[in-house]
Image (cartoon, rainbow, N blue to C red; front, side, top):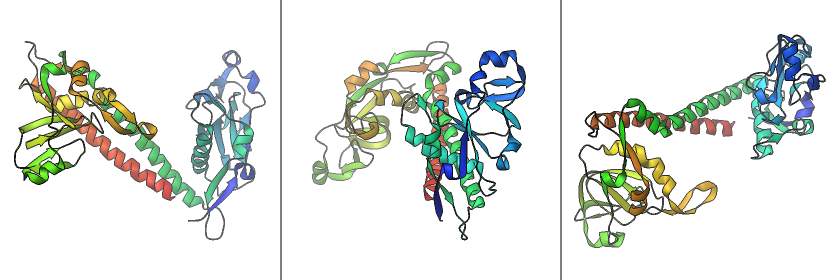
Length: 366
């Protein structure tokens, strides 16, 4: 696919409202009406409605109007569909310079937004000048005859719309998963208890290395900090279903293990003290707290390079809210119900992540 890179000012003009300084909240309250006054600080809505207006959409070519915030939420954009409207001081509109029916406003909005937003940096308070907008370079797809490809613009805009929907869904799913304490409180009574009252935390044996495995070959796995099995040996230390955590490397990451196995010193294990505790529930309840306890060196963008998390650190800092029955005993059934909910949320999150990654690739390829 071929694109033409153009300067915004080659095709569009950025306009501010000459009456903007007068359109204060006080003025609007005193002159209420049906015509919207847009504000960059309320980009998803509007500042108010008054009985006069500054612009008519029919005055602009092809009703092509993109609202752009210039202060505070600078760079945020919205397609304007109102027939008559006004603007406050902290926003403006982008309109066509010429009568061109081969430019699709939603596509231009998405492309321009990404170019401008990336140039503004990470400051929580941003401002955007007319010159910055009009000198921004954007790419527009071309047909074989060299003219702008309207259909391809529409196709790409649809992909961006899907991407935003997935991002929104993904954000909600993460929020639901992280909001575990509220979920427990809704289900019923609970008791907050130290993790060391529920489990005996043990670290694996440092003797278990690949070299040890080579000289003691067998069928029983030895797990270390990583996701893969370290080696297989002829004996085992544990038999059953257990929750384990990485003590070194990517410290705090949990792994559920079932069967006959051993662990080396780079992994710890939660050995239950009470049979009415569901390890899946515990895993979902503590995994976020474990990662926050890690100590060590971080890589680029906060990525863990080498971190540590000892049994003592967990015992001293981790508390769990466990559902209880009316008689004060741990409610195993409710724990399992909660764990089942988290499992479904986690599966949904993984599916959304996969779709998000796919859409990100589509965007890059375009």
